Image (cartoon, rainbow, N blue to C red; front, side, top):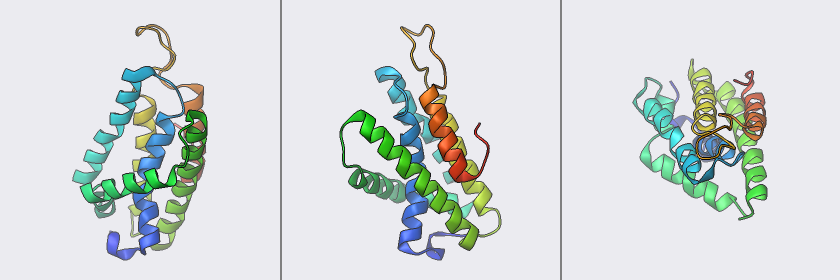
Length: 166
């Protein structure tokens, strides 16, 4: 299995940052209110803990505490706007680009099973984030689990991952 040392600093930054960008792009695609936004912010944590404890060394490396902190810092420095709509579009563009770059990197340099494990990890992050809270509900009534905006982002990321949208 591949590990951090098998990649250049730029390649590693791509592999490290893509999961955070994917989660954030889905979380900002809809509006689920304060409580829903908190649920969406914490939804990826379970997938990250699972990957950190899993059998794939690449995913364990990506999910190390210092790598998660570095990814957060990298994404924060890349985001140049505070306008919600512009932020959402920027995150979606960056997430799709990084996911696509990560797939290309792992096709070239990943060990057996790394590409599929990483692809599944990112797909799981999109799914968990999208389904963490209802969109458009009022006091818990009505709404939908995955909004049209979230479905569009999932489709965009799925295309980058070369998988059908879930």
